[in-house]
Length: 482
Ligand code: SF4
Ligand code: SF4
Image (cartoon, rainbow, N blue to C red; front, side, top):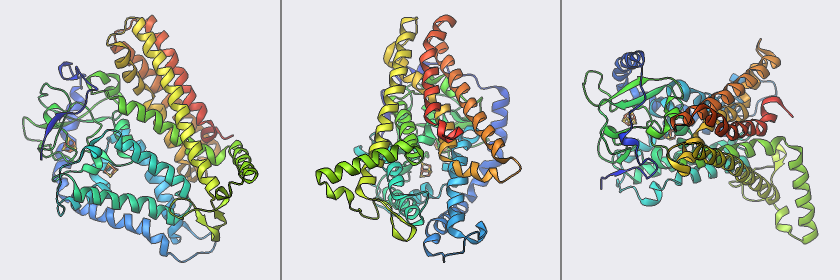
């Protein structure tokens, strides 16, 4: 069954708003990139095949690699090499790359999305079910993978890497096999990092736009060439575009074309780009969960709380908490002196969920305050719309925090270069300062688009500044140490 529907109710007026101006330079540069890249897309199946093989080597290879003596070079130690490539390069660079190139990782390189689409050729191609199309599905998927990744020790153990990445690959292929017709139902609806990359791609310098935008607002269509079900003639947002170039014909007068734009432009004019409350809540939740996933490892208080819960377990006879659980749910590696108990599992999950709840409360509360002040100071659109639009202002500071906090391996490796530990610290600080300033700038532009005069803007901006600083305070141990 195919369908064309309005994507959701988050953008009631976007279709009639003018699109932000793209410079002549941005259009010309986009045309040049199109003319170089479109002919190369015929090689994408080969690239995807190579990426799939590399994925298997990095994910499964370390399970069979013989032990090597300490101090062995990285190039002769497959588990360490795999770990560095995944967490020191892939993770931070994919997230940073969205600023320059949008979701190019997804469309050009990702073996998982390509495998899901390949599997679709051989499956029953059932209609995409409602539970999969539910906008909360990628949020749940992100939470499960992020939290499970921590409890099984995905950063330290090859078995956990195989479980998380291999399991996700199997789920992607299965989802692709079963649902959609020549589409990537997995990428649009369920990938654990797809939504994160999608939100951050709104900050990026690349956009694919219809040459003639039809009215009606962002839509969802299972017809047409787009693998992520974008209704191309009504496309107004970057979020779901994986940059596969299938809709681009450089010589055509109509259709979709690539443009370069100033980073942040889409969020500055977010009301014209299908602002969506699910994205905003996800931004808050995702920031909090990622923060929890980092802080439990470094906060001494976490160990105190764990100790105290353990003592209570003994006092009250909760002996089950002091047993170890299954390997697929928690880290059980006696040979490496790491065996998690149910106590550890409960503590890690509870701490990460607690951090997410706290972050949602703080950022949600401050955004609500900002929206309230904006509405009182003459902002148009009302409280609800103002809240959703202002929630996007945290995207830069959240992204930088994620990269700096969870991309620690990249920065650790730089300390051994001439940059040195001091230089690395300075780079982290500069990145965070840039994210903070960018977030504040976005907040100011969003308020200007709501029609606030400078005095009202300054007032309504204050809660947003506090929110961005709060994210920074949360990530302080990652950026500057304890
Ligand atoms: S959405 Fe996920 S699976 Fe799909 S291409 Fe992007 S990263 Fe890969
Ligand atoms: S909009 Fe075009 S480039 Fe983007 S995912 Fe759809 S078909 Fe690919």
